[in-house]
Every structure is written in structure tokens, then in C-alpha cells.
Image 1 (tube, one colour):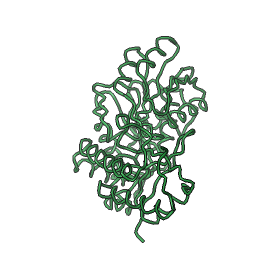
Image 2 (cartoon, one colour):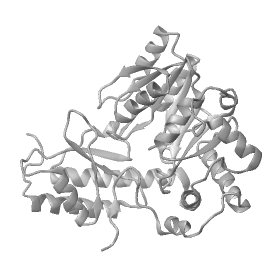
Image 3 (cartoon, one colour):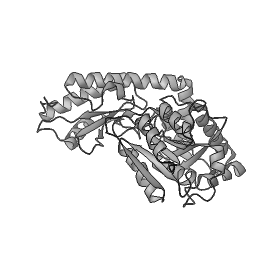
Image 4 (spheres, one colour):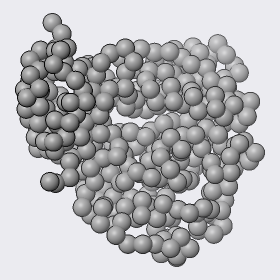
Length: 370
């Protein structure tokens, strides 16, 4: 049996070239490995045109590790952070802030509602004690894309700091530091760059990072200490994710050879179109209207048929070669299908056929509410 295709928002399906890069062992003090770390960091900063004012700090662990490190290091103790909340990853940022002792102000939005720049502006105007906004760019709990450029303009206009969770958008959705001001942008190796999971990274405003001494509660999560040590020695402070970094180097090489961000966005957009068109043709309904849908992951309403069970649906689709994702919503029964990874629209159409066959074999006939 061949390995299944991962239609998930990370981990995701990687290329043979990326996987092959992990067949070599690296020493953490080795000059070649340290040079590879430096080259990856340079390229990560360049993807968002942030070379003038920002630096890249890589960190071992998942994307959530990087989010916690950014908030803990770059947001001072005693700060007050506004979090526009329209999904599960916004809620996770709120949990992190409370864990690390930073005051969080939640600005509630509906799960089908993009974060509203006007409401953010009003919240900042009403409370001068708010020092930062923490914004998720693409909320993968639903697949909604928040209007980052407009939000960043509001935050900059009010003179507040901006921390961006760009986990599922970095590398595929345009973000340009020359026109969009931020203190930190956070992403990870196993998303739209199509590396493997295990390394987060923070593209931090250098002046903000240099002023962050004493903010964090954690040695392991101290981005300033990590960056200063790397600047001094070229090495990671603690055991680095060597194979993950090597895979990311290979993935970035392919990303650049394939045409960079415009080409990656075009392929994911075509994947998303093929997915939505195919699933709607079966009778399944998307959770979001097309105007709000990012080409990263699509949420579908679960069929209301009594024969439908997600666990069995997942098993049947997996047996046919594809791995889906459960829903992340609290009030609506859904499942999710990713559009990202080393896949194309042809792969997506095969996945839709696998969904159709699985639902048929389960006896699911009613696919949508009347």
C-alpha cells in the first residue's frame, strides 16, 4: 500500500526531494549545518521582504511553541493584548496569554465573520491601556482569511504593536513588511513551505527583540537569548532539529525553483477551486462563502444523514488513499479538507472521488440540510 495523501493543514504531503533531505545526519556544531541554518533564516525573512528591519529566530517545536515564545518574549509583562477572535487558533492565543500572565482582551467575532478593522480600531480608541494586537491571519479552524493589511494599518495608526500568527498563510498569501508594519510574524516549517513539522520561526522587528530582555518567564522560549547566541556562535542554544532544518532547506529550494509565492498561491488556489467544485457537485456544502475562503483548508458541513459517522468516513477515505481532518467548530458538525502540500488539482479530484465512494459505501444519501 502506498502512503496516503495528507489533505490536512500540516503535517502535509511532502515531495520525495524534501523527504530525501532527511537521510543525512548532521552535527549541531558542524559548520555546514550552521551555514544551512543561516541560509534558511535569510530566505525566510526575504519571503516577506523584511530584510530592512527584521530578523529571523528559529525555534525547536511546533508552531504553537513559536507563538508562545513570541508572545512571551516580545510582549512585555504588564502589557494588554487585544485578540480579535473568530476561531480556535485565536482562542489558543488567548489561552497562551493567560498562561504567561499577559492580560488578554477578547474581541468576539462570529466563526463566519472576518476580523473587522473598524471594530479593532474602536477597541483601541476606547482603551489606551491596550499595547498590542495579536492577530491570526488565516484561521484554519474554519479556513477564513482575515484582512491583515487593513488591520495592520489600523494598529500602526494607533501606535500599538502587532503580533501576527501567519502559520497557515506564510509563503502562500502575500505579506510584505515594506508596506505592512508588524513586531512579529510567526510561522512554521510544516505548512505552506511544504517542509516537515518540528520547527517554528519568528520574524521579529530587531529593535523590539533587542528591547525584550527580561520579558519572558522561560529559558527555552527566550527568543532574545536564542538570537543573541546564534549571532555570536552561529549555533542553536540547545539540540537543533537537524533533519527538520535540512528538509526545510530542500523545501525552500523547490519553492524558489517553482516560482516562489505567486506560483504557490496559484497552485493552492487551483486546488481549492477543484475541491470546492467537486464536493459541491456531490451535494456537500461549504461552511464559508467563497469570498471569505482562503485557499488553505476548506470546512464542509457534515452530511445530516443518520448513516454518516466521521470516524467511519475518515477510515473509508483513508483506505482509498487520503487523510482528512475533523471539524474544529463548537456549534456545527463539520469536517475539513486541506488544499496545501505537494499536491495538485488532479490529486484533489481523486480525493473527491474517494469521498464519493466512501459516502456511497456507508449508505449516506442525504448530504445537505434542505
